[in-house]
Image (tube, helix red, strand yellow):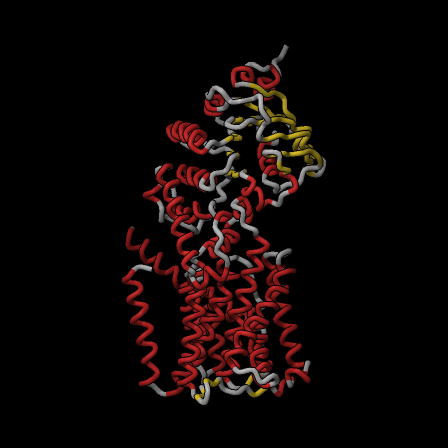
Length: 264
Length: 310
């Protein structure tokens, strides 16, 4: 856990009364929270609690029925999905949404799309500036692959990569653009124990190195309790608890949501 | 490109350039047909193979490019060197107009809309007699540079070769660039593409415009090679054939466009005498390749390599 997250200034992410329903199902209701710079915020809750829905709202894949999202004082809801990364919000996906027919390196290069400028003409004619840009991007992408120990797999197509490495690559693709907020949707799902430990270490490392704020949706309680500074617990679309790991672990509403109500 | 690959390509190109000098003039004509098909298949592959947007309207683009080039030359007296790119650009503009409804649709619906576009284009060519001379067609003059006229198949061969090489070179560069990666990302996962900041609307439009431009240039070249155009050369079946070319050669591969374009435009020439046979063989090749080579002939390479590795 990291000490000294400054909670006195403005939060980097402010969410107010965020709500959405899908045909009568209230997937998220009155979601309100503040996340501070440098924080790792675990978002937990039983299946169907609204965790991924929350990420999809932040990514603008869904439109909320009401509420506000401010990221660094900018109105996230005023953006289109493809403009979110430029704000500094990046994400990974629960089910792999990697670009399967591309190599590992090309996937990471996609993360740099918005920082490259080559248009159709300069790409077609291979202007010098464009070649320079491409070389520069490749260097950046290679560095990320090295950091994740994926450099050997640089030219391997994604669908030939082992599962655990696909998950790491998803993270690499998300951070190569140096976002300020990273949304991780179950990064440890399906990983072996050793993979999870390594993943936790990588997350702590990239937080330092990239000055990241991280929202972490994760079912692996040990991992999420270990690395989160604070946790937000959802159940049936509502926040039922929020606080530090120890606080949340002993919260009766949380225990009830996970284990059911104690009889008698 | 690796230097060994580059060497092979170079040798192949030089051999190709010298080849017609030693052959009957008919071979030059056949090679021209092949080149034009390659340009067209390359364009179609950008939108369908790379970007994943079904396009069954490619014959409409070829038709518009052919007629625009021909009309610029005959009605407005613009030389071939202005008329061809102008024809390509007009077709690209039509591609933009097609892309707008296409953005709201995918799969089967997109296939139907683009197919409808090709069918309507054919109808317009037949019935707008004052512009197109309807079924009577238009005679198209040969390209010229000063007093040098490209009035033989051998001369046209070198012209079309140069244009094809340039068009393929540009396509190859595009697919290996940021733009090409954005195309592929849309095909693979629209949501991940958006999360990477790809403006998918913009890139889908761009892919359609490119496909149309390539089709238009192919059409313009065809008009001047054939020296006569009429609507029956631009039936909707040509759209299917173009799609078959990239399916057989390899979706999402420039080399696949070349191989598929060459193969499926060469076949009808060797089967000229037996038309009913031709269509049979055509269908058989398509079915066989779809079953056994879902990634086209270029996919064979990977298949063999994996087979050897076992």
